[in-house]
Length: 182
Image: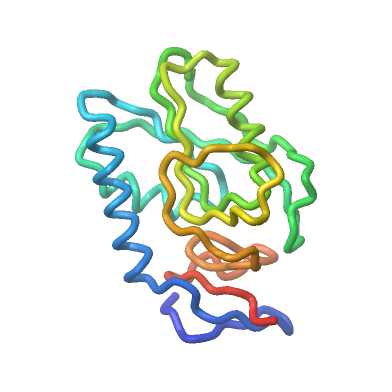
């Protein structure tokens, strides 16, 4: 879906926050950094479904190293605009992460509770290393002490959609990121 200045869902209006060009430039930079950091290794990139799929796809295409992929699906939002704080496991890891270099790919980190949950689960599997990549971070919304190793953009604590992010499963397919107009 081609980006426009504004999109609407129900009676909610969203304006462009990050253009497709800004996003793609930053994704390439992150890919270059990860490739340097993991040169000689074959990390396993774990995409957090559903929102992280577009970011994961673009990120792994920007890598100059080999990698593997796996997916996990958790939920803390449902159809709401604010995280409930409760993490529900919907799809668990398929790969054995023991002794592997694991890189978790998140679309957005706001409260940090989902990342904290994933870090605990993965660390229990005894990986060789664990890194977190997030396209977007809302640091002012953090409720957990988490470290984001590779950060795309720090944004305000406002609701966003596009480039994998949704509201009621809509607008994931737009190439820009839009912020709710209040």
